Length: 530
Image 1 (cartoon, rainbow, N blue to C red):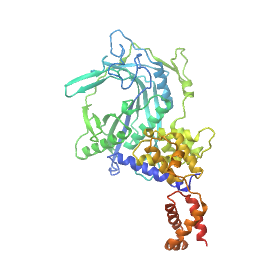
Image 2: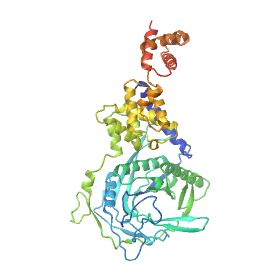
Image 3: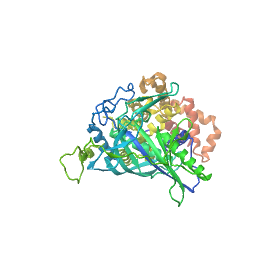
Protein backbone atom coordinates (compact mmCIF):
# COMPACT_ATOMS: atom_id res chain seq x y z
CA UNK A 1 0.00 0.00 0.00
CA UNK A 2 1.17 3.56 -0.65
CA UNK A 3 1.76 5.82 2.32
CA UNK A 4 -1.08 7.65 4.04
CA UNK A 5 0.38 10.96 2.89
CA UNK A 6 -0.68 10.03 -0.62
CA UNK A 7 -4.30 9.72 0.46
CA UNK A 8 -4.56 13.36 1.52
CA UNK A 9 -3.47 14.92 -1.76
CA UNK A 10 -6.27 14.02 -4.17
CA UNK A 11 -8.68 16.84 -3.35
CA UNK A 12 -5.81 19.34 -3.13
CA UNK A 13 -4.58 18.51 -6.63
CA UNK A 14 -8.12 18.45 -8.00
CA UNK A 15 -8.53 22.07 -6.83
CA UNK A 16 -5.10 22.90 -8.22
CA UNK A 17 -6.12 21.59 -11.63
CA UNK A 18 -9.16 23.85 -11.48
CA UNK A 19 -6.99 26.85 -10.53
CA UNK A 20 -4.58 26.07 -13.38
CA UNK A 21 -7.48 25.92 -15.83
CA UNK A 22 -8.79 29.23 -14.47
CA UNK A 23 -5.47 30.97 -15.02
CA UNK A 24 -5.54 29.90 -18.66
CA UNK A 25 -8.73 31.88 -19.23
CA UNK A 26 -8.57 35.66 -19.15
CA UNK A 27 -12.35 35.92 -18.76
CA UNK A 28 -14.19 35.13 -15.54
CA UNK A 29 -17.92 35.32 -14.91
CA UNK A 30 -17.68 35.47 -11.12
CA UNK A 31 -18.68 39.14 -10.96
CA UNK A 32 -21.47 38.98 -13.51
CA UNK A 33 -24.75 40.55 -12.45
CA UNK A 34 -27.33 37.99 -11.42
CA UNK A 35 -29.94 39.99 -13.36
CA UNK A 36 -28.47 38.74 -16.63
CA UNK A 37 -29.09 35.28 -18.01
CA UNK A 38 -26.99 33.82 -20.80
CA UNK A 39 -28.17 31.22 -23.30
CA UNK A 40 -25.70 29.14 -25.31
CA UNK A 41 -26.16 26.53 -28.02
CA UNK A 42 -23.36 24.77 -29.86
CA UNK A 43 -23.03 23.55 -33.43
CA UNK A 44 -20.10 21.19 -33.84
CA UNK A 45 -18.59 19.86 -37.05
CA UNK A 46 -16.67 16.61 -36.53
CA UNK A 47 -14.62 15.17 -39.37
CA UNK A 48 -15.46 11.49 -39.76
CA UNK A 49 -12.37 9.30 -39.54
CA UNK A 50 -12.21 7.74 -42.98
CA UNK A 51 -9.61 6.86 -45.58
CA UNK A 52 -11.65 8.44 -48.38
CA UNK A 53 -14.12 11.27 -48.82
CA UNK A 54 -17.88 11.19 -48.34
CA UNK A 55 -18.84 10.97 -52.01
CA UNK A 56 -15.59 10.11 -53.83
CA UNK A 57 -12.60 7.81 -53.56
CA UNK A 58 -10.09 10.62 -53.03
CA UNK A 59 -7.83 10.20 -50.01
CA UNK A 60 -8.30 12.12 -46.77
CA UNK A 61 -4.77 13.06 -45.66
CA UNK A 62 -4.00 16.00 -43.42
CA UNK A 63 -0.97 18.00 -44.51
CA UNK A 64 -0.86 16.60 -48.05
CA UNK A 65 0.40 18.84 -50.84
CA UNK A 66 -2.24 21.31 -52.03
CA UNK A 67 -4.76 19.84 -54.47
CA UNK A 68 -3.15 16.39 -54.32
CA UNK A 69 -6.23 14.68 -52.80
CA UNK A 70 -8.89 15.77 -55.28
CA UNK A 71 -11.10 13.60 -57.48
CA UNK A 72 -12.97 14.78 -60.55
CA UNK A 73 -16.18 14.87 -58.49
CA UNK A 74 -14.54 17.02 -55.78
CA UNK A 75 -13.56 19.52 -58.47
CA UNK A 76 -17.17 19.54 -59.80
CA UNK A 77 -16.21 18.32 -63.27
CA UNK A 78 -19.46 17.99 -65.28
CA UNK A 79 -20.77 14.45 -65.63
CA UNK A 80 -19.31 13.14 -62.36
CA UNK A 81 -21.67 11.66 -59.75
CA UNK A 82 -21.49 11.17 -55.96
CA UNK A 83 -21.12 7.68 -54.47
CA UNK A 84 -21.93 7.52 -50.74
CA UNK A 85 -19.17 6.15 -48.48
CA UNK A 86 -20.74 3.33 -46.43
CA UNK A 87 -18.08 3.48 -43.71
CA UNK A 88 -18.92 7.15 -43.06
CA UNK A 89 -22.59 6.29 -42.66
CA UNK A 90 -21.74 3.57 -40.15
CA UNK A 91 -19.59 5.96 -38.14
CA UNK A 92 -22.42 8.50 -38.15
CA UNK A 93 -24.91 5.89 -36.93
CA UNK A 94 -22.53 4.70 -34.18
CA UNK A 95 -22.08 8.27 -32.99
CA UNK A 96 -25.82 8.90 -33.01
CA UNK A 97 -26.45 5.73 -30.98
CA UNK A 98 -23.75 6.66 -28.45
CA UNK A 99 -25.46 10.03 -27.95
CA UNK A 100 -28.87 8.45 -27.43
CA UNK A 101 -30.33 9.70 -30.70
CA UNK A 102 -33.25 8.27 -32.61
CA UNK A 103 -31.76 7.06 -35.88
CA UNK A 104 -33.97 7.72 -38.89
CA UNK A 105 -34.95 4.62 -40.89
CA UNK A 106 -34.90 6.83 -43.98
CA UNK A 107 -32.82 9.97 -44.39
CA UNK A 108 -32.30 12.20 -47.40
CA UNK A 109 -29.56 14.38 -48.85
CA UNK A 110 -30.07 18.00 -49.89
CA UNK A 111 -28.20 20.61 -51.84
CA UNK A 112 -27.40 23.78 -49.91
CA UNK A 113 -26.54 26.52 -52.39
CA UNK A 114 -24.02 29.25 -51.71
CA UNK A 115 -21.19 30.69 -53.73
CA UNK A 116 -17.65 30.60 -52.38
CA UNK A 117 -14.46 30.22 -54.41
CA UNK A 118 -13.61 27.02 -52.51
CA UNK A 119 -16.98 25.40 -53.27
CA UNK A 120 -16.62 24.55 -56.97
CA UNK A 121 -20.10 23.02 -57.44
CA UNK A 122 -21.83 26.08 -55.98
CA UNK A 123 -23.61 23.92 -53.42
CA UNK A 124 -22.87 21.65 -50.47
CA UNK A 125 -24.43 18.20 -50.12
CA UNK A 126 -25.89 17.96 -46.63
CA UNK A 127 -28.90 16.63 -44.71
CA UNK A 128 -31.09 19.53 -43.69
CA UNK A 129 -34.70 18.32 -43.79
CA UNK A 130 -34.36 14.58 -43.13
CA UNK A 131 -31.13 14.07 -41.13
CA UNK A 132 -29.50 10.80 -40.14
CA UNK A 133 -30.58 11.10 -36.49
CA UNK A 134 -32.48 13.35 -34.08
CA UNK A 135 -33.33 13.92 -30.43
CA UNK A 136 -30.24 12.82 -28.52
CA UNK A 137 -28.83 14.01 -25.21
CA UNK A 138 -25.31 14.48 -23.87
CA UNK A 139 -24.72 14.48 -20.11
CA UNK A 140 -21.30 15.60 -18.91
CA UNK A 141 -19.44 16.62 -15.72
CA UNK A 142 -18.39 20.20 -15.09
CA UNK A 143 -15.53 21.36 -12.89
CA UNK A 144 -15.85 25.03 -11.97
CA UNK A 145 -12.35 26.60 -12.16
CA UNK A 146 -11.10 27.72 -8.76
CA UNK A 147 -14.29 26.57 -7.04
CA UNK A 148 -14.19 24.51 -3.85
CA UNK A 149 -17.49 22.80 -4.61
CA UNK A 150 -17.78 19.37 -6.13
CA UNK A 151 -18.23 18.88 -9.88
CA UNK A 152 -21.81 18.83 -11.14
CA UNK A 153 -23.47 17.27 -14.16
CA UNK A 154 -25.27 19.05 -16.97
CA UNK A 155 -27.28 17.77 -19.93
CA UNK A 156 -27.71 19.29 -23.36
CA UNK A 157 -30.21 18.04 -25.91
CA UNK A 158 -28.94 17.15 -29.36
CA UNK A 159 -31.41 18.45 -31.93
CA UNK A 160 -30.01 16.54 -34.89
CA UNK A 161 -26.96 14.82 -36.34
CA UNK A 162 -26.47 15.07 -40.08
CA UNK A 163 -23.90 13.98 -42.64
CA UNK A 164 -22.41 16.52 -45.02
CA UNK A 165 -19.36 17.27 -47.11
CA UNK A 166 -16.76 19.89 -46.25
CA UNK A 167 -15.77 22.73 -48.57
CA UNK A 168 -12.26 23.49 -49.79
CA UNK A 169 -9.93 26.09 -48.33
CA UNK A 170 -9.08 29.55 -49.59
CA UNK A 171 -5.50 30.68 -49.05
CA UNK A 172 -4.95 34.44 -49.01
CA UNK A 173 -1.57 36.03 -49.68
CA UNK A 174 -1.65 39.67 -48.45
CA UNK A 175 1.71 40.49 -50.03
CA UNK A 176 0.98 39.18 -53.50
CA UNK A 177 -2.66 40.25 -53.12
CA UNK A 178 -3.81 36.91 -54.47
CA UNK A 179 -6.12 34.18 -53.25
CA UNK A 180 -5.55 30.54 -54.07
CA UNK A 181 -7.85 27.55 -53.53
CA UNK A 182 -6.88 24.17 -52.07
CA UNK A 183 -9.55 21.52 -52.69
CA UNK A 184 -7.99 18.80 -50.51
CA UNK A 185 -10.75 19.33 -47.91
CA UNK A 186 -13.52 19.53 -50.50
CA UNK A 187 -15.75 16.52 -49.93
CA UNK A 188 -14.15 15.49 -46.62
CA UNK A 189 -16.87 13.71 -44.57
CA UNK A 190 -18.39 15.62 -41.67
CA UNK A 191 -20.95 15.05 -38.96
CA UNK A 192 -22.76 18.22 -37.93
CA UNK A 193 -24.10 18.01 -34.39
CA UNK A 194 -26.64 20.71 -33.54
CA UNK A 195 -27.27 21.14 -29.81
CA UNK A 196 -30.22 22.92 -28.25
CA UNK A 197 -29.48 26.19 -26.35
CA UNK A 198 -29.30 24.49 -22.93
CA UNK A 199 -26.00 25.92 -21.67
CA UNK A 200 -25.36 28.98 -19.52
CA UNK A 201 -21.60 29.51 -19.15
CA UNK A 202 -18.36 29.13 -21.05
CA UNK A 203 -17.25 26.38 -18.67
CA UNK A 204 -20.36 24.37 -19.51
CA UNK A 205 -19.74 24.83 -23.23
CA UNK A 206 -16.11 23.74 -22.89
CA UNK A 207 -17.14 20.73 -20.78
CA UNK A 208 -19.64 19.62 -23.43
CA UNK A 209 -16.97 19.79 -26.13
CA UNK A 210 -14.53 17.89 -23.92
CA UNK A 211 -17.06 15.12 -23.28
CA UNK A 212 -17.92 14.89 -26.96
CA UNK A 213 -14.22 14.56 -27.78
CA UNK A 214 -13.93 11.69 -25.29
CA UNK A 215 -16.92 9.91 -26.84
CA UNK A 216 -15.85 10.37 -30.46
CA UNK A 217 -12.33 9.22 -29.62
CA UNK A 218 -13.65 6.09 -27.89
CA UNK A 219 -15.83 5.35 -30.92
CA UNK A 220 -13.03 6.06 -33.37
CA UNK A 221 -15.46 8.11 -35.44
CA UNK A 222 -13.32 11.28 -35.27
CA UNK A 223 -9.73 11.89 -34.16
CA UNK A 224 -10.86 15.28 -32.72
CA UNK A 225 -7.57 17.04 -33.48
CA UNK A 226 -8.85 20.58 -33.28
CA UNK A 227 -5.49 21.99 -34.36
CA UNK A 228 -5.99 20.15 -37.68
CA UNK A 229 -9.59 21.31 -38.09
CA UNK A 230 -10.99 17.84 -37.40
CA UNK A 231 -13.37 19.31 -34.81
CA UNK A 232 -14.74 22.82 -35.22
CA UNK A 233 -17.08 24.57 -32.79
CA UNK A 234 -19.60 27.34 -33.48
CA UNK A 235 -21.32 28.93 -30.49
CA UNK A 236 -24.68 30.73 -30.60
CA UNK A 237 -24.85 33.16 -27.68
CA UNK A 238 -27.46 35.57 -26.34
CA UNK A 239 -28.20 37.32 -23.05
CA UNK A 240 -31.39 38.62 -21.48
CA UNK A 241 -32.59 39.86 -18.15
CA UNK A 242 -34.43 37.45 -15.93
CA UNK A 243 -38.14 37.05 -16.76
CA UNK A 244 -37.75 38.78 -20.15
CA UNK A 245 -37.76 37.31 -23.70
CA UNK A 246 -34.58 35.83 -25.11
CA UNK A 247 -32.13 38.33 -26.55
CA UNK A 248 -30.69 38.64 -30.05
CA UNK A 249 -28.05 36.00 -30.59
CA UNK A 250 -24.65 36.18 -32.22
CA UNK A 251 -22.69 33.28 -33.65
CA UNK A 252 -18.98 32.82 -32.91
CA UNK A 253 -17.48 30.67 -35.68
CA UNK A 254 -14.69 28.10 -35.87
CA UNK A 255 -13.40 28.11 -32.29
CA UNK A 256 -10.19 26.09 -32.39
CA UNK A 257 -9.63 24.57 -28.93
CA UNK A 258 -11.48 23.49 -25.81
CA UNK A 259 -9.89 26.28 -23.80
CA UNK A 260 -10.86 28.82 -26.46
CA UNK A 261 -14.50 27.67 -26.28
CA UNK A 262 -14.72 28.80 -22.64
CA UNK A 263 -12.85 32.02 -23.34
CA UNK A 264 -14.83 32.96 -26.46
CA UNK A 265 -18.23 32.28 -24.89
CA UNK A 266 -17.42 34.19 -21.69
CA UNK A 267 -16.03 37.15 -23.64
CA UNK A 268 -19.08 37.33 -25.88
CA UNK A 269 -21.46 37.15 -22.92
CA UNK A 270 -19.66 40.03 -21.18
CA UNK A 271 -19.50 42.02 -24.42
CA UNK A 272 -23.24 41.70 -25.00
CA UNK A 273 -24.04 42.68 -21.41
CA UNK A 274 -21.88 45.80 -21.68
CA UNK A 275 -23.49 46.77 -24.99
CA UNK A 276 -27.00 46.41 -23.55
CA UNK A 277 -26.15 48.21 -20.31
CA UNK A 278 -24.86 51.12 -22.39
CA UNK A 279 -28.28 51.37 -24.04
CA UNK A 280 -27.07 50.01 -27.37
CA UNK A 281 -28.40 47.17 -29.49
CA UNK A 282 -27.11 43.68 -30.19
CA UNK A 283 -27.09 42.81 -33.88
CA UNK A 284 -27.63 39.34 -35.27
CA UNK A 285 -24.17 38.76 -36.69
CA UNK A 286 -21.40 36.25 -37.21
CA UNK A 287 -18.25 36.85 -35.20
CA UNK A 288 -14.82 35.19 -35.04
CA UNK A 289 -12.64 34.44 -32.03
CA UNK A 290 -9.24 36.18 -32.06
CA UNK A 291 -7.11 33.83 -29.96
CA UNK A 292 -4.26 36.34 -29.72
CA UNK A 293 -6.29 39.38 -28.65
CA UNK A 294 -8.65 37.16 -26.61
CA UNK A 295 -11.78 38.76 -28.05
CA UNK A 296 -14.49 38.20 -30.65
CA UNK A 297 -14.46 40.30 -33.80
CA UNK A 298 -17.27 41.00 -36.26
CA UNK A 299 -17.22 39.10 -39.56
CA UNK A 300 -20.59 39.73 -41.22
CA UNK A 301 -24.15 40.56 -40.25
CA UNK A 302 -27.00 38.04 -40.40
CA UNK A 303 -29.90 40.49 -40.31
CA UNK A 304 -30.80 39.52 -43.86
CA UNK A 305 -31.54 35.79 -43.94
CA UNK A 306 -29.55 34.10 -46.70
CA UNK A 307 -31.59 31.93 -49.05
CA UNK A 308 -29.68 28.68 -49.45
CA UNK A 309 -32.38 27.34 -51.84
CA UNK A 310 -32.37 23.85 -50.32
CA UNK A 311 -33.43 21.19 -52.77
CA UNK A 312 -33.28 17.37 -52.77
CA UNK A 313 -30.01 15.96 -54.08
CA UNK A 314 -31.12 14.27 -57.32
CA UNK A 315 -28.05 12.07 -57.69
CA UNK A 316 -28.32 10.28 -54.32
CA UNK A 317 -31.10 7.86 -53.39
CA UNK A 318 -32.66 7.80 -49.89
CA UNK A 319 -30.40 6.36 -47.19
CA UNK A 320 -32.04 3.38 -45.47
CA UNK A 321 -30.95 2.27 -41.98
CA UNK A 322 -32.32 -0.83 -40.29
CA UNK A 323 -33.56 0.25 -36.83
CA UNK A 324 -35.48 -1.69 -34.21
CA UNK A 325 -39.25 -1.39 -34.65
CA UNK A 326 -39.06 -0.05 -38.21
CA UNK A 327 -40.44 -1.92 -41.20
CA UNK A 328 -37.81 -3.92 -43.04
CA UNK A 329 -37.66 -2.60 -46.61
CA UNK A 330 -35.11 -5.17 -47.73
CA UNK A 331 -32.90 -2.39 -49.10
CA UNK A 332 -31.26 -1.22 -45.87
CA UNK A 333 -27.77 0.20 -46.24
CA UNK A 334 -26.73 -0.09 -42.58
CA UNK A 335 -27.90 -2.20 -39.63
CA UNK A 336 -28.12 0.03 -36.53
CA UNK A 337 -28.91 -2.88 -34.20
CA UNK A 338 -25.62 -4.65 -34.84
CA UNK A 339 -23.71 -1.35 -34.53
CA UNK A 340 -25.37 -0.69 -31.16
CA UNK A 341 -24.22 -4.07 -29.85
CA UNK A 342 -20.63 -3.26 -30.83
CA UNK A 343 -20.38 0.11 -29.06
CA UNK A 344 -17.44 0.38 -26.64
CA UNK A 345 -17.75 1.46 -23.02
CA UNK A 346 -18.45 5.19 -23.05
CA UNK A 347 -16.79 7.74 -20.73
CA UNK A 348 -19.71 8.14 -18.33
CA UNK A 349 -19.99 4.36 -17.91
CA UNK A 350 -16.24 4.25 -17.23
CA UNK A 351 -16.57 6.87 -14.48
CA UNK A 352 -19.38 4.93 -12.85
CA UNK A 353 -17.37 1.72 -13.02
CA UNK A 354 -14.36 3.36 -11.42
CA UNK A 355 -16.54 4.63 -8.58
CA UNK A 356 -18.66 1.52 -8.06
CA UNK A 357 -16.13 -1.26 -8.75
CA UNK A 358 -12.79 0.31 -7.87
CA UNK A 359 -14.22 2.57 -5.14
CA UNK A 360 -12.53 5.71 -6.45
CA UNK A 361 -13.84 9.13 -5.45
CA UNK A 362 -16.04 10.81 -8.06
CA UNK A 363 -13.52 13.64 -8.45
CA UNK A 364 -10.71 11.15 -9.06
CA UNK A 365 -12.79 9.23 -11.62
CA UNK A 366 -13.51 12.47 -13.51
CA UNK A 367 -9.81 13.45 -13.59
CA UNK A 368 -8.79 10.03 -14.89
CA UNK A 369 -11.44 9.68 -17.58
CA UNK A 370 -11.29 13.28 -18.78
CA UNK A 371 -7.65 12.84 -19.79
CA UNK A 372 -7.43 10.17 -22.47
CA UNK A 373 -3.71 9.55 -21.96
CA UNK A 374 -4.04 9.44 -18.17
CA UNK A 375 -6.79 6.84 -18.35
CA UNK A 376 -4.77 4.72 -20.79
CA UNK A 377 -1.93 4.63 -18.25
CA UNK A 378 -4.35 3.72 -15.46
CA UNK A 379 -5.93 0.94 -17.50
CA UNK A 380 -2.58 -0.48 -18.64
CA UNK A 381 -1.16 -0.52 -15.10
CA UNK A 382 -4.18 -1.93 -13.27
CA UNK A 383 -4.99 -4.52 -15.94
CA UNK A 384 -1.44 -5.81 -16.46
CA UNK A 385 -1.47 -9.58 -16.60
CA UNK A 386 -0.19 -11.33 -13.49
CA UNK A 387 -0.14 -8.13 -11.38
CA UNK A 388 -2.53 -7.18 -8.61
CA UNK A 389 -2.17 -3.46 -7.99
CA UNK A 390 -4.57 -1.33 -5.99
CA UNK A 391 -6.59 0.86 -8.40
CA UNK A 392 -6.80 3.55 -5.69
CA UNK A 393 -3.03 3.58 -5.24
CA UNK A 394 -2.39 3.69 -8.98
CA UNK A 395 -4.96 6.48 -9.52
CA UNK A 396 -3.59 8.62 -6.71
CA UNK A 397 -0.01 8.17 -7.84
CA UNK A 398 -0.89 9.12 -11.42
CA UNK A 399 -2.83 12.21 -10.40
CA UNK A 400 -0.81 13.40 -7.40
CA UNK A 401 2.72 12.54 -8.46
CA UNK A 402 2.93 12.05 -12.23
CA UNK A 403 0.69 14.99 -13.17
CA UNK A 404 2.29 17.19 -10.51
CA UNK A 405 5.78 16.53 -11.88
CA UNK A 406 4.68 17.15 -15.47
CA UNK A 407 2.80 20.34 -14.51
CA UNK A 408 5.91 21.61 -12.71
CA UNK A 409 7.88 21.09 -15.94
CA UNK A 410 5.05 22.49 -18.09
CA UNK A 411 4.87 19.26 -20.09
CA UNK A 412 1.61 17.70 -21.25
CA UNK A 413 1.15 14.06 -20.38
CA UNK A 414 0.57 13.04 -24.00
CA UNK A 415 3.85 14.74 -24.98
CA UNK A 416 5.90 13.28 -22.13
CA UNK A 417 6.21 9.79 -23.70
CA UNK A 418 6.54 8.25 -20.24
CA UNK A 419 5.95 4.49 -20.56
CA UNK A 420 3.16 2.91 -18.52
CA UNK A 421 5.58 0.20 -17.36
CA UNK A 422 7.82 2.85 -15.77
CA UNK A 423 4.91 4.24 -13.77
CA UNK A 424 3.90 0.71 -12.80
CA UNK A 425 7.45 0.01 -11.61
CA UNK A 426 7.41 3.11 -9.41
CA UNK A 427 4.10 2.02 -7.88
CA UNK A 428 5.56 -1.43 -7.17
CA UNK A 429 8.68 0.11 -5.62
CA UNK A 430 6.52 2.23 -3.34
CA UNK A 431 4.43 -0.75 -2.32
CA UNK A 432 7.58 -2.76 -1.60
CA UNK A 433 8.92 0.09 0.57
CA UNK A 434 12.01 0.40 -1.63
CA UNK A 435 11.37 4.14 -2.13
CA UNK A 436 9.13 6.80 -0.63
CA UNK A 437 7.12 9.55 -2.34
CA UNK A 438 10.02 12.01 -2.17
CA UNK A 439 12.32 9.58 -3.96
CA UNK A 440 9.59 8.64 -6.44
CA UNK A 441 9.25 12.32 -7.36
CA UNK A 442 13.02 12.62 -7.83
CA UNK A 443 13.10 9.50 -10.02
CA UNK A 444 10.22 10.84 -12.14
CA UNK A 445 12.08 14.11 -12.64
CA UNK A 446 15.31 12.31 -13.59
CA UNK A 447 13.40 10.08 -16.00
CA UNK A 448 11.82 13.12 -17.62
CA UNK A 449 15.20 14.88 -17.91
CA UNK A 450 16.90 11.86 -19.50
CA UNK A 451 14.12 10.94 -21.89
CA UNK A 452 12.99 7.77 -20.07
CA UNK A 453 16.08 5.87 -21.28
CA UNK A 454 16.42 4.05 -17.96
CA UNK A 455 13.86 2.24 -15.87
CA UNK A 456 13.02 3.66 -12.41
CA UNK A 457 14.95 0.81 -10.76
CA UNK A 458 18.04 1.62 -12.80
CA UNK A 459 17.79 5.31 -11.93
CA UNK A 460 17.33 4.50 -8.23
CA UNK A 461 20.39 2.28 -8.28
CA UNK A 462 22.56 4.76 -10.18
CA UNK A 463 21.60 7.73 -7.98
CA UNK A 464 21.41 5.70 -4.74
CA UNK A 465 17.80 6.80 -4.33
CA UNK A 466 16.58 3.94 -2.17
CA UNK A 467 15.38 4.00 1.41
CA UNK A 468 17.72 3.20 4.25
CA UNK A 469 16.24 0.32 6.22
CA UNK A 470 18.97 0.17 8.85
CA UNK A 471 16.93 0.01 12.09
CA UNK A 472 19.91 0.83 14.31
CA UNK A 473 20.68 4.00 12.31
CA UNK A 474 17.05 5.12 12.34
CA UNK A 475 16.82 4.60 16.12
CA UNK A 476 20.12 6.42 16.65
CA UNK A 477 18.98 9.44 14.62
CA UNK A 478 15.59 9.50 16.34
CA UNK A 479 17.29 9.63 19.74
CA UNK A 480 19.59 12.41 18.53
CA UNK A 481 16.68 14.46 17.15
CA UNK A 482 14.78 14.10 20.44
CA UNK A 483 17.81 15.26 22.41
CA UNK A 484 18.43 18.27 20.13
CA UNK A 485 14.82 19.53 20.05
CA UNK A 486 13.59 19.78 23.66
CA UNK A 487 11.02 22.51 22.88
CA UNK A 488 9.30 20.43 20.18
CA UNK A 489 9.39 17.39 22.45
CA UNK A 490 7.80 19.42 25.26
CA UNK A 491 4.97 20.61 22.99
CA UNK A 492 4.32 17.05 21.85
CA UNK A 493 4.12 15.75 25.38
CA UNK A 494 1.71 18.55 26.29
CA UNK A 495 -0.76 17.28 23.68
CA UNK A 496 0.34 18.82 20.39
CA UNK A 497 0.62 15.49 18.63
CA UNK A 498 1.40 16.98 15.20
CA UNK A 499 4.81 17.99 16.54
CA UNK A 500 5.86 14.40 15.93
CA UNK A 501 6.02 15.18 12.22
CA UNK A 502 8.41 18.05 12.84
CA UNK A 503 10.73 15.60 14.58
CA UNK A 504 10.28 13.05 11.80
CA UNK A 505 11.18 15.74 9.29
CA UNK A 506 14.50 16.26 11.05
CA UNK A 507 15.18 12.54 10.83
CA UNK A 508 14.35 12.57 7.10
CA UNK A 509 16.70 15.50 6.48
CA UNK A 510 19.49 13.75 8.31
CA UNK A 511 18.99 10.70 6.08
CA UNK A 512 18.65 12.76 2.88
CA UNK A 513 14.92 11.90 2.65
CA UNK A 514 15.82 8.23 2.23
CA UNK A 515 13.87 6.94 5.20
CA UNK A 516 10.57 5.18 5.79
CA UNK A 517 8.64 8.04 7.41
CA UNK A 518 6.03 5.72 8.88
CA UNK A 519 8.78 3.72 10.57
CA UNK A 520 10.53 6.87 11.82
CA UNK A 521 7.28 8.21 13.30
CA UNK A 522 6.61 4.86 15.02
CA UNK A 523 10.13 4.82 16.53
CA UNK A 524 9.80 8.43 17.74
CA UNK A 525 6.43 7.76 19.35
CA UNK A 526 7.80 4.72 21.14
CA UNK A 527 10.80 6.66 22.43
CA UNK A 528 8.68 9.59 23.60
CA UNK A 529 6.51 7.28 25.70
CA UNK A 530 9.46 6.69 27.99
